[in-house]
Image (cartoon, rainbow, N blue to C red; front, side, top):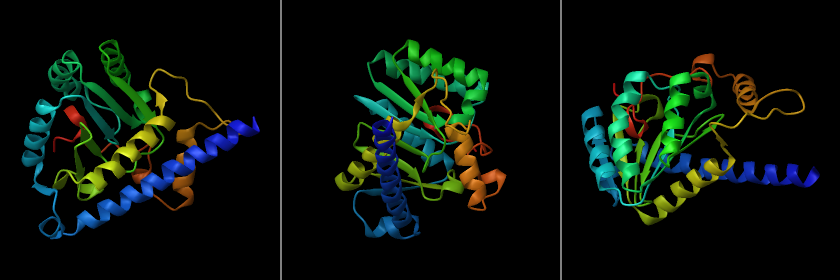
Amino acid sequence: MARQQAELAAQQQRVETSRAAAAQLIVQFAEQDAPARQPNVERLTGVEQIREKLAVLTHRVRAEVMTFAPNGAHTPESLRAAEPLDSELLGRGVRMRTVCLDSVRNSPHTVAYAEWLAERGGQVRTAPSLPVRMVIVDRESAVVPVQAEASCEAAVVLTGQGTLTALCALFDSVWAAAADLGEVRRRDGSGFSAQEREVLRSLYRGMTDESSPSGWAPRRAPRAGWPTT
């Protein structure tokens, strides 16, 4: 038991370290003129540009799409809109891995869609919290919002090798610690799930319910985990 606890603590520390590194990267790109000063950075302004770029990247994907989708439960409409492209990618043998918030477990249609994906080779896991909305294609391009609270206003496409290495490490560490959507959530000795512990930590830090992991589901998300409005 002590060994398992030590391994869990080490894994959590790796996740936190990766999250901190990714957060620092995103701060660097949050400045309005940052893309003009840095190579391997493309700035996207407005939801239409973001959608168009995601469509280009996903249609060109060769091997893998990795997504952080911290937007809460999906609507039935957004899931239906995502189905044709998801089916086409999976049919081409593209590996699709998505991490959502634990709160999506309370959405029957989201769970049903995850099961549909799993039947075709896709994978969906959940975590108590996610550091940022993000889509990584073939470990070569990453799309992240300039500001997490306004992800439709502006985003950047990052292609630098060092940046992608850090973001892929972040995804891999969060993925390793996340639970399969079909898995029963474990509770600690106090009877709390990981999501409940995260909410308590959020409240302790003085966050509002609206910004806590369980309550944040601001906009419906289409394919690739990006909101539509």
